[in-house]
Amino acid sequence: MTAAALPLAACSGGSDGSTASRSVRIGYVSPQTGALAAFGVADKYVTEAMRSFYRRGLTIGTRTHPVDIIFRDSQSDETRAAQAASDLIFIDGVDVVLVGSTLDTVNPVADQCEANEVPCISTAAPWQSWFSGRGGDPAKPFKWTYHFFWGLEDVIKVYLGMWAQVSTNKKIGALWPDDPDGRAFAGVFPQAVSARGYSLVAQPAIPAGTTDFSAIVSQFKTRGVEILTGVLPASDFALFWREAAKQDFKPKIITVAKALLFPASVLDLGTNANNLGTEVWWSPAHRFRSSLTGATPQVLADDFTAKTGKPWLQTLGFVHGLYEVATEALVQAGSLGDRAALAATIGKLHMNTIVGPIAFGSLVNIPKNVAKTPLVGGQWRQEEDKGYKLVIVGEDSNSDMVSGSDKVQQYG
Image (tube, rainbow, N blue to C red):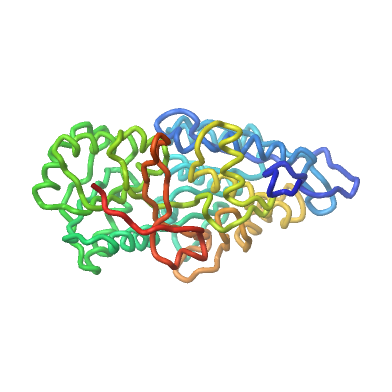
């Protein structure tokens, strides 16, 4: 069988016959429990698949090393995430740490790695929130920590492109929570959308633990909001959306980050979720391939569903991508045990992955520790007796990135 027909089951390379006893140790921090557990659903599947992929070891330079992957639960807590990273560094002695699943997991892990001089590769958080949220200085790049993902400028572009396809009064209601993601979005969206002729209905930051959204819904409805956006957690948006149904608030187009990423979150909203929109990081329709196995996104998604019984998730490709970047860096470093050399190698990587091209230090006005990945828009479309399907929507310029994109449809 070809690699594309059997994702993640191929050998990582040949051996020259000399196998060192020293193993490659890869640490992984994931929110397996707690409020962010939905972001960690794909982590164990990919990690187990990678253990199979590495079963004959990884050839670095002239030696083939066994590979150990140490998996630790952040419990969806920033303090616990930092402790998990510390344990990987000081107890497990890992060579590199991998992490994804929102700022609450990514940033504390990256901070521990930077402070303790251990290479870290992260994803699944807007790059500005990762870099600026950690006090990053473009003139003094981080030495040990590297991040690949899209930025706020990309999600703004995607949302503006989606809004432009629906006739509206250009009045926007924004749901910005009082958390790192909410503050990051609120800091750049108003100016960006006003420059395109949109007006933002003033809305204070939503405190953590808010359960009553009746006043916000009433305000949006009274002010004639026809575009709804935001970056709420799924549980909070579900409360908002139920209140919106009670008050018969029906914007013409909805594009909400974070809350609408996963099928389970959309199903929790009930039958009134048709044409709700969100950003799409990765999907089976994307035209990329794994640098490890040659598998396409469709093959990876199908294998995930076959093995777990669950629909594909946007995080799936990025978890796989973490292992792609780590593997390439370890191989290019040429020897095992020199953490500084490994970190420097990560910072020079230019490669193709299942989530698209990864190139650190290649973009003007982007920190050298950041590699940007593509972003498109999507809407959830109801399928008879099959729940909801995430359909890629947007401009024709996406055609080189995804297959079969559709036009944006109005909600309601």
